[in-house]
Image 1: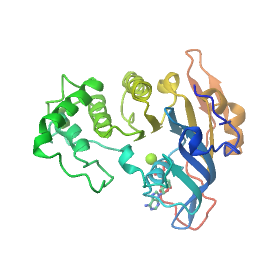
Image 2: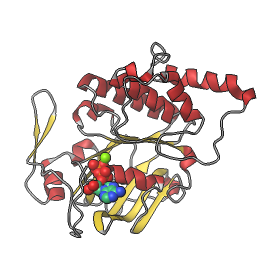
Image 3: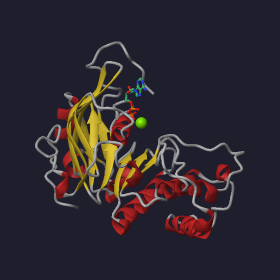
Image 4: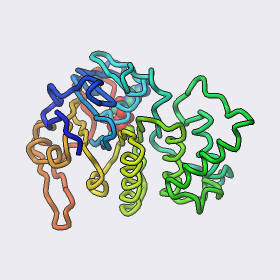
Length: 298
Ligand code: ADP
Ligand code: MG
């Protein structure tokens, strides 16, 4: 666990560190509004380089929006965000991104290996990366070597030549993570890569991501639905609810005190006999303090 000034205080007050001190992502009083509705506001956050951070919270609270803001795809209504020392979007060549809800039609013939290759050619799903042409012909062997290395890294060698649509959810996710890593990003943004995986696979993918984080020094921000399968791999969590955000270790954030304060209602964190954390009384649904009529939830 990196030592940081991050506390479980609301908004992580006074926690945003200058980039020079090693934070990959720094937010200062950051606010996002979509069509007049406040998604979150006054967000202070520092994600130290090399950390594995999970973003948690109910549906519709703005977890995906936070990743989009980091990518510069969602402008801020106020405050500031610095990503790898640049304004959002300015360093996207050094950022890998796996958007939410990727599934492949079972009939899709494209091989897993080619999906990984798309990341190398700059055709990352969801984010246009201008200036990335295809590898020149002379570099074809180099490109193939890199793709093989990425597939090996995620343990996908045995199935990378099968059609992606015929692979299991866990196998698809591994290859998509390899795709996002193709250009050796310093920051990896993963939006619910564990969605629809069973608990064993969720833990296995979290272990893989932690290893990438440690071995390659990549900073990882991962949106997750359930903290339990991944709790042992995380350095810190960001928990979003009611338009606010708390950061800290799991032990600091997933507590009765912190979550009750965040939700402004009594929420209880129970420790099950098998070690799982169970949050009881967690209100569902997005924050609506903006109150300008937009009620779109996913
Ligand atoms: P999460 O990832 O936490 O489930 P999102 O970040 O996707 O939530 O969305 C946060 C809120 O912003 C939701 O209420 C969602 O409906 C709304 N939202 C996101 N994108 C748009 C958009 N393009 N237009 C209108 N509302 C949006
Ligand atoms: Mg989302």
